[in-house]
Image 1 (cartoon, one colour):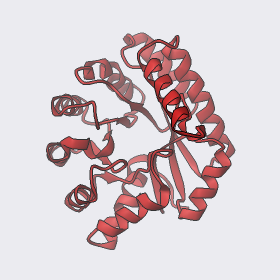
Image 2 (spheres, rainbow, N blue to C red):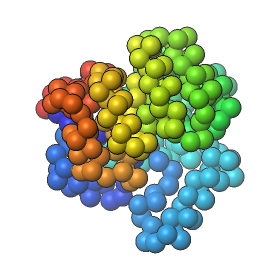
Image 3 (tube, rainbow, N blue to C red):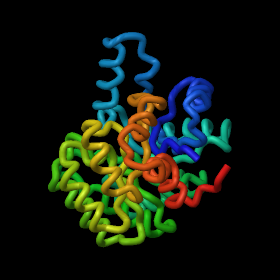
Image 4 (spheres, one colour):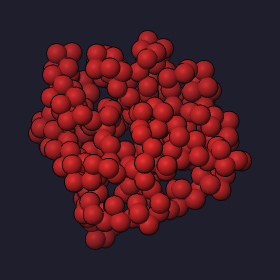
Length: 265
């Protein structure tokens, strides 16, 4: 099976399924989103969409809880429309107190039978805001946690995530985008810690992609990050740089199948 381990709800949903069919993608791990830059008709509209995202993350668009719950409603609707093709990870506002976090995860993640928590996009120096997310993962059966690890995170932030991975060794933690500019140090941390994994979307360069997946073929998970990545091009990059068909197969589906206990189609 080929599984896109990280893409966001894009509209219309039917177009995503059509593109998955054309690219030979069997399943997608779908993530919630609070904005839809794929609907923009030009660069100016993309700027408006990205500004909205910035305001949302800065708390200028009202309750983060309300916005996250609305995005999960959209996510769950897409999964119910194509249950054989989608699994889901749900967004959780960081920085909430323990009780509020647990209630949120129970209400939005557990009751909707979502497979994980994320995507989380903390700023540099803000990793401590995820502490109750790690506690929630542990409380709810070690749900996987997906954390954006490109800019603005620095290597110290990634080391702090690794420290939480040591503290919660049964919670799988997926670091997005191979760690971005910090890919070398991130690769070593993932090699050291059994519960740390790497997502391949928005990789730093094809050279980096090849080095990392061939060094850690059992710890890398294919991701597209739609609408920012292309299903066909992302898959072709893995096939191009993988040294063996076995490595490509592990990255393109085998690893995430084992991690989420996905059944073979």
